[in-house]
Length: 446
Image 1 (cartoon, helix red, strand yellow):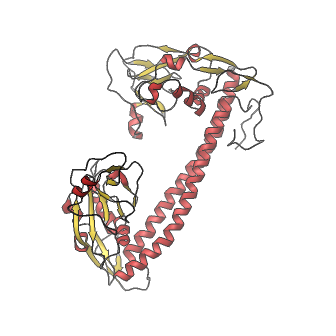
Image 2 (cartoon, one colour):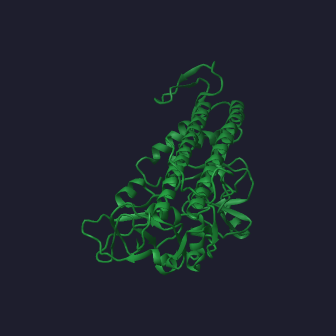
Image 3 (spheres, helix red, strand yellow):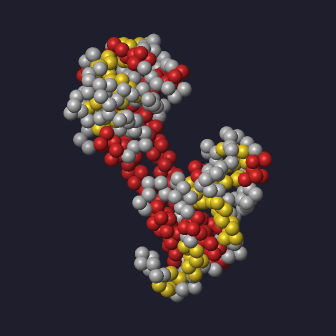
């Protein structure tokens, strides 16, 4: 309730103690039943015409064919077997026995599921949409996760564990009203979130366009231009040279497919591909090594301030300038560019990697491959433009100023989305647990 606007929603006239920690006080006329008294397990053999269903937190239970198109990374699938597959009717619920991360999934379709799921069928009169919200609400999920240590160990949840948790049961008309209210209100919030996400996409595109223009056209609109001989690019400043990465590096060090042994803590970071993203070195989830290993793995070249870290695989083409914030050695699939800093600004090279010729080159190499992998010959031949060093510095300073504004705007939009998501979560929790009374709510003519 704390994240909902005070006074916007009314409470019920009278409450009682539910005796259930996760529910707290509930409306006086609501009843409480264990989950097994509202939902029973069903073991109907899959029909020959059933399409296999898949479940994810984002989409619920939907046909596998749709899920594959959505390409959701959290899909839980198994190859369709024989008698062990169970039929799922519309408005059944399923418990995933393979990976439980948040609530019981609701099915909008008929089909079948593998033995990795338990199918639930309501044995009392319910509005499925109400329980779809309830069983995904934060208070219920917290109670479910606290009900067994097996969840914290990454194991399965059983029907018995689900069935032992008390659930509210108001009359079906009230359930329907709550579901209608939440359908309408969450749809409004989701629309606002989608608009903000589109704004983030637009800001990202504009940000990229600013970088691309700066590293391929420069800052002086009056500068004499020449044909770049690149169809999509057009003209570039006449005094700029087109070079390859190998022309501006003293050394390119490849970690190949080997990595130093690493641990969760230590003095020296083992830089892996997961640590380099969007032009920055990210320490979250970092792995570390000890002094002797660090010395062994930096024999070929010690990372120094101004060097560029580059990922050659999974995900390929990410890069950042090493600023010396933490001593590190290269993990597998990482490459280190030791630049000739008398010729190039490291930050200019970094911007060029993410835009212009180099970015186009990297994307061309990635086409047609599900997991991009760059060989060293390709990496050495990454093309980019080379303005005079003083001009590079001015471009970097300009981009630093302009991109800071875009980054600030983007951060504000992300925060707005976060607040909307918090409000959505709070609204659902308040409505399904009876903390707000929506019995007299009427859908507005939007």
